[in-house]
Image 1 (cartoon, rainbow, N blue to C red):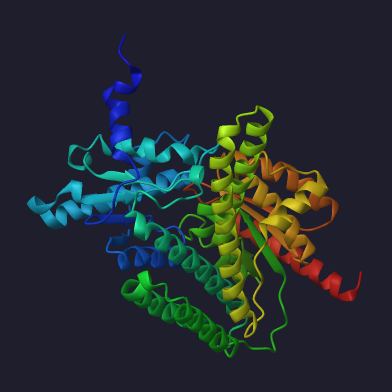
Image 2 (image 1 turned 60 degrees about the vertical axis):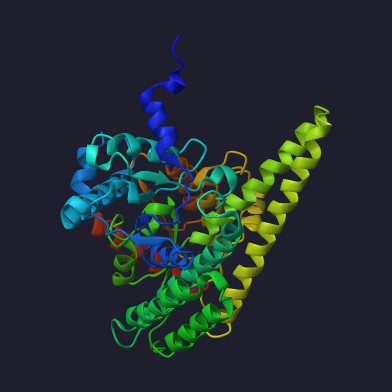
Length: 451
C-alpha cells in the first residue's frame, strides 16, 4: 500500500511550506497592520533579507476566484495579495522572473482556527499556476511560540526575535498615540503626518542598524513623537466616549478588510483603543509556558523522569522569554506615558485572572476568544463606554466570544456591537455604528452625572 505521506500533494506541502533560510530570497510580507508590516520588513532587511510588504486588497477578485467561501475573509485577502503581486512581478521582469527567488511569508496557528491550514491551502492554489509552483511559503507558528529558528541562522534568530518584538511594541504605542490624539487634533491630518514621519525614521533605523538592537534610539523616536503629539491636541474638545475593540487579529488591524472601522467610529464621535499586536504575541508566549508546565506535571505523574530535565530547561528558557518581553514592553510604555496619557496595554496575567474569577471562559480552551472576552472585561474595568467585536464572517472563536459577551454587557448596560466582515458592505452598517457610538456617548454622559 502506498504511504499517503508520499503522495505528490503531501510532498509539495512538506517540501514547499516550512521554515526556510531566507537569506538571498525576496520575502513577501502581507500588509496586515500597516505600520507593523513596514517595521517587520525593515527588521528583516537589517539581517540581510530582502523583505517587501505587498500591496493589499488589489487582488481580492483573485483571492475570491480560488476560494470556496468557506474560508474566512483574511484567507481571501492574503491569497489575492500574493497572486496579484506575483503576477505583477512576472509582468515586470518577463523572462528574468525566477519563482524560486521568492518566499511568501504566512504565519500559522495551532488549534481549531482555520487559519492554521491556510498556508497549506494557499500552497495548493499556487501549485495551480506552473509559473508560481516554486515559490515557497515560510511561516512562524504558535506551536513553538513563534520561534524564529530555521528562517535565519542560529546566531541571528534570537537577535531578530528581540528586535521584532520591540518593534511590535513600538507599533502598538504609535497606534495608541494616534487614537488618543486624532479625535482631538486642532489641525485635521496633523496626527497622521506626525506618525508617518516617525515610521519613516524607524524604518530607516531598523533597516540600517536593526541587528545592533538600537532600542535606545527607537525609544527616543517614540518619546519625541508622543511629546509632539501632545501639542496637537485641542484641549477645549471634551473627552469622547471610549470604545474598546476586540476580536480576530487580522480583521481588527487591517483597515482595508474592516473598511476603516476605527476612522468611522472617530468620525461619529468616539475615541478608540484597539487590542494590541503585542497582546496576542504575549498570549502565545504565555501559553507556551502553560503547556510546558502541563508537560512537566504529566511526566512526573507518569514517572517519565528522563523527560523532566529537558522539559524543565525549555520551561526556564520560555520563562526568561516571557520576562524579557514584559520588561521591554514596560520600558516603551513608560517612556511614552511620561509624555502623553495613552491607554496602557492589557496584561495577559490579569486577563487570565479575571476570566478565572468570572467563570466565563478558560485559557485552557485557547483561541482568540480567551483574549477577546478577557480584553472586553478589562475595558469594562477601565471604564470604557462601549465594546466592538470585530471578526470574519463565520469565525468560530469570535462567535463564541459574541455568545458570551453580549448577555454580560447587556446586564451591565454597556453598549456592544458585533461587526462581521466579508467583502460586502451592509446597507445599514454606518447607521448601526453611528447608533452604537451615540449609545456609548449617552452612557458616558450618565456616568459624568453620577447616575
